Length: 332
Ligand SMILES: Nc1nc2c(c(=O)[nH]1)N[C@H]1C(S)=C(S)[C@@H](COP(=O)(O)O)O[C@H]1N2
Ligand SMILES: [Mo]
Image (cartoon, protein in one colour):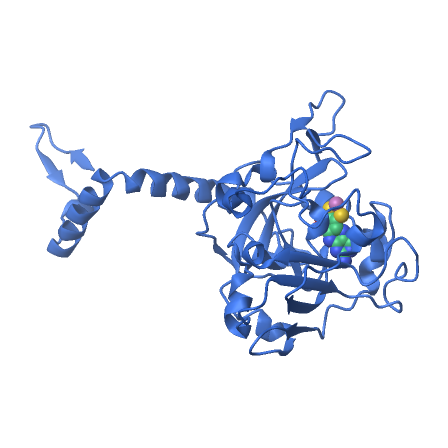
């Protein structure tokens, strides 16, 4: 900046104004780049990330999990982040009970350490991998995703993890691998409801290979800058933001690459209500209720308006092409 000194109005540059040649060259390049228009998008992204940095506070309850801000397109919504309290006390984790507050009450018995994840099936490098190793397979990123439950509520959660595609790159799926199956912990000693008949345990979910490889599919180790609380699926879960919440299996113990479409827990329980795809779709009602709108957790005051549910939960630009030519009413 120029500062005015003296009565004669003489202006002289402050030290920071004196531009060394290298900086000057850099600036010229920057100006050129800005002229291309790329800068606008990048700066908007930067402003968003700055705003985000102020928004997401570490609750200081669990171990910190360092993360860089994600550069993946669409990975960070600017919507208000759900309170940590709500995100950790209003949960679905049927292994610990079917009421929303059961997981927070009961999941203290889950032992997230030591933990291993077995990777098997159609891969060149199957094996049982320690959590500590998995954590290092790629840089941890922060992603602020909408989470839409099939029950009609939603949240906005800052997850920490990395694209699942990094796992595939490590274990090298074979050419005939067409699906990925996510198998979660089912330990009757630590999970009081695993004996119940609500579901056929273990809780299993699955994705088509191209869905699993989409950069938005997040292998998730933390939230709000800390490791995952037990009730949210410690120590490692999957998060698939364009699908209903139940596709995001918690407390993963096994990942299997297969040729056949996996039989998933909810599909086995009620095939007419829960299809394999389960993409968030306001135009396809659940047989017993509409999916057109949702209630955002934290906005539940007397006059809070419901929100319109978005196709693919708002991630159509990123994932719509995965379903080109598919009838999404049939493939619900
Ligand atoms: N193992 C397991 N994973 C699960 C579930 C479950 O019951 N068991 N519930 C699913 C459902 S229905 C939802 S909406 C999300 C909720 O995730 P959150 O509690 O972290 O918000 O987890 C999903 N993953
Ligand atoms: Mo859900």
